[in-house]
Length: 332
Image (cartoon, rainbow, N blue to C red; front, side, top):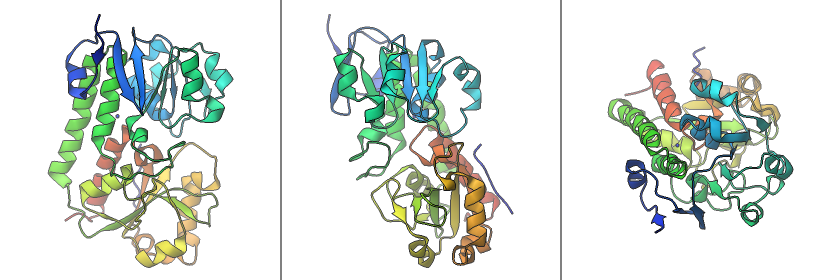
């Protein structure tokens, strides 16, 4: 069995990420974020990251010494920032409480998804003078309170690069932000140049998890980060939904008979199907699913679930997917 695992005084108005990257931040800095105007008179010194992607971007920007807490983790932290992350208190593996976040005395909150009630909402923090920044990739969604909303337009890596550039500007680490964006752009461009569109003719389904192992599955919709990977490689998503992670039955997936099934891996164990080993056993033993072409031909790819979400790991996920398909002889 071939499996592959994976292991974004005047008031300076930020209107373009490129401009943010090329200049030292002039405070007060004003940003529009998810319909909310944020003003920073100085760089934050006590930041909380809610959501793994937000925390990892801050860590990659070299801001561990200005972070007082993180929460909502799915996968192991990126190896290159593991040492820095170990210095930052983890408030919760899943959702941190409003009280726990306030207990860190934060002066800034970066959130991957929409702010949940139990962690406090933007208005509550704003009343306390604490600005909250939500990932632009979530802002682009409709009804996205926890990352499972509807995305009317395809996700692009430009939203990730915007997020990195804006966070770098807020903390006045623009040069580091520009370096990180440049690195990710180069990696993305390399895949596009070498293997882009070479998966034409392949169909895929990306399986994140399921409420029950044998029940309906959370699979990638047509506009999310997983769909972005398929679009770059030229593959066809068998799922035609604007939800990022719609629930789809295997009875509906079976007739489409995808060429490749991508199985999400994660440390999270909120659901039985979070465990990739459980997913693999189901694929191999279910009377219907085990007969799918992808299972019969062993065209199964294990991929970090964080890469399936719109995060900075999506670029790495694209690289892993391209390499896996190439190794399996599926690229033209």
